[in-house]
Amino acid sequence: MNIYDFTVKTNRGVEKNLGDYKGKVLLIVNTASKCGFTPQFKELQDLYMTYNDKGLEILGFPCNQFAGQEPGTNEEVQNFCRLNYGVTFQIFEKGDVRGETAQPLFKYLTAQKKFEGFDENHPIAKPLMEALQKNFPEYLEGDGIKWNFTKFLIDREGNVVARFEPTTNPSDIAKDIEALL
Amino acid sequence: MVKVYTVAGCPWCEKVKKYLASKDVEFEEHDIERSKEDAEACRKLTGIEGAVPVTTIDNENYVLDFDKEQLDKLLCL
Image (cartoon, rainbow over all chains, first blue to last red; front, side, top):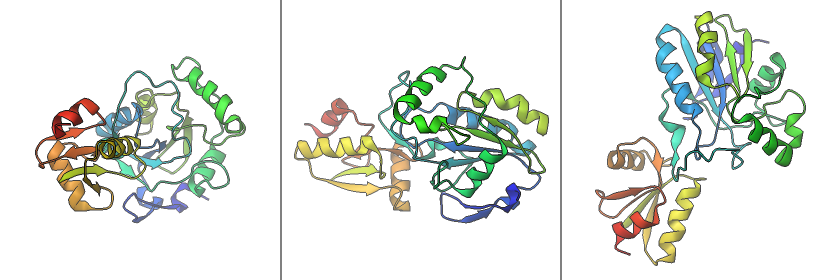
């Protein structure tokens, strides 16, 4: 079993075989719902703009499993929803990323790279832990996806080389991406 | 006729619709995920791709967001 064996659907309903991305460096991310304050979208788009012509593709998989429970995001109030936040990297069909109903791709990714804890220095670490303990204590167990914006980095040969939790900003992954390009 | 551009599952769109209904404003709802024409018309109006809710009365002046004050001004409520 290899990352290139998976077939997924784009947000336009078109089947896409991940084998089409052979030779590229991939960043696979479960993205948030379309409403709310999600600054990581902007940073992901910045990474995409910087490294796409060098061989980086970002694949976003929207998921509603964490919807309506955004922790500690009062810095900015936004009263509208934006489809895909105007990003230009590939967004796939909405689907589950954790538990029994998780898409096979995410079952594979989380089996390849285990959960190794949050970066406690990140500003969302504390509110995120509190939100999980309060609302979804079962999410803290095991290696399943804990929250929106868990990021998996895949090298040009299809190996899952790293997993970054929501507490790692996309901009902080730039050096890891560069090392693979 | 007042038009409201929306998408399903957008809480702010629901708030706009409820607010307009509470003021007895008749409106047409246009889901931009269901119609390419609506998505394009909405993008033309605001210059932003896929942002909702957008309320307009003349396809020229609009309010993006759930903003009661701006809605009142737009619709002379």
